[in-house]
Length: 496
Image (cartoon, rainbow, N blue to C red; front, side, top):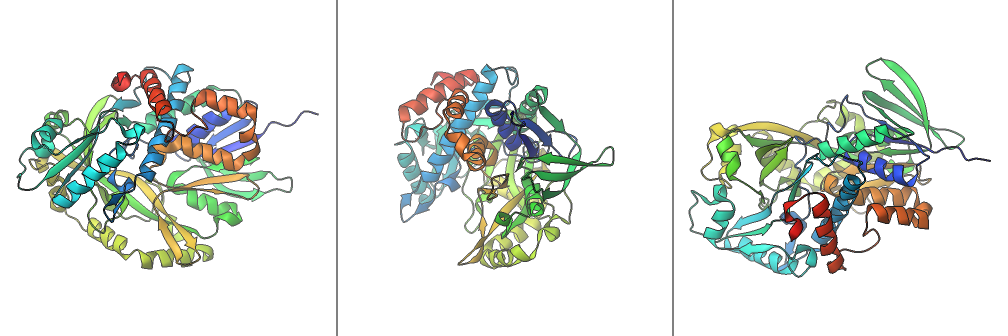
């Protein structure tokens, strides 16, 4: 007797659902995949270029990924993130070669990644970080300089007009990239929509879930344009709705969702409007977060490539809104508070008073206050050349903890039901850049036996050649693979 085709629902149309959809389409060609998105456009929330930093987080320049304690630098997290980004590039290269996304879509561009610090203590840290990181092949192309003339040649905006009465240092990775995750996700979803047994429903809001006796899920959905209610059924559900994931996860009623809460943080950037200034800066430059500030506050002066246009941003500046999504409701936060997570949320709040103080300071900042922070990275900046823009909404995870009651987490976390029929992705950075690695983890939780099969292993290795091999341990393979993916993705660094 023939087995019925599997029904899989993906909620959200950002880079996470797009990536999972691609992987499932190749691994389960007979499955029926339905993608539901509340907005009328694909990838218009966290993945959108204007809402996402687009750094292509590869740990080249983000100093918060390399903690410095007792004179020693820990690069373990940086190695993990860098190797995960290499997996992402492999899948994207496969999609181009397989004509799943057009060759002429410039979703990824070369933009050097730099770290910049000043003061003796910070310079000492950056030098030790450089020395430690260069011992790993994945970071071997990193360049370090404390020469003011050299740094000025790299990033003139940052050095011109600066008083050289203290030491400065910078590192540079020419193989850094800027990624338009919104553009990439839209092309991936467009490919899926043309595939057999795949449906994409925009303007549909998921209202509720109920588990049926036969093991399937019944999902109540509202067609917002037609103002109609629908019932659909699925064997497996993935919730990748960015900040909207937590409320949906709670609605599933799965036991594993208990104890999770969320704290929304909105982001703002200063965007340069002077074309002459924009053209003079050609890098993503990350500094150190102020003492007591959270990791998400790391200042950066970023060159962006969005829809073929070069842009320049500085930030981030944090704000507070009770919305879980940029296009969400002010009731999102209060409605997410329930008996199972109120104590973890209160406990996390008590233990993170510094974060509260930081947010209060950020919220009451004037335009002049924000501009003064920019001056630390661009001394000759003119306030008339910059405008404030609102980025995406992020929801930081609050998780129940036996010892502390509740802890605030800054990474990403996968929540999966015991029967493996529901998986949800919570959290933010590094997020989009490591989407392939994260979605492989999702599939490992939802389809553990299939992931072990020779058939799936072979298919995955076709899409991601180094799947199952550590690029941290196998340096030669890492560099060879990087060269191959760079050629396919048409990056200028491909000859290195």
